[in-house]
Image 1: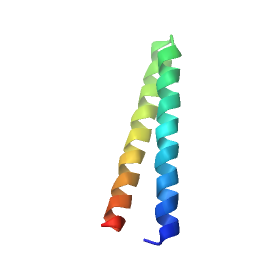
Image 2: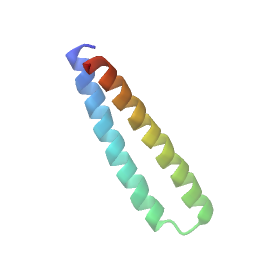
Image 3: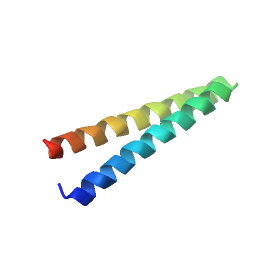
Length: 62
């Protein structure tokens, strides 16, 4: 994988972590159970995205 692509993957991983942090804060503030459930689903999706990005990055570094 070109170094530029590895760099972009690392940026995306950092962005995912920041987004997850925002979702966790939003979930803590949410009162409506349906809103909490949607935010929970969004958080799970971003966690999976991070796992996939890390997997891609590790595959090409090794």
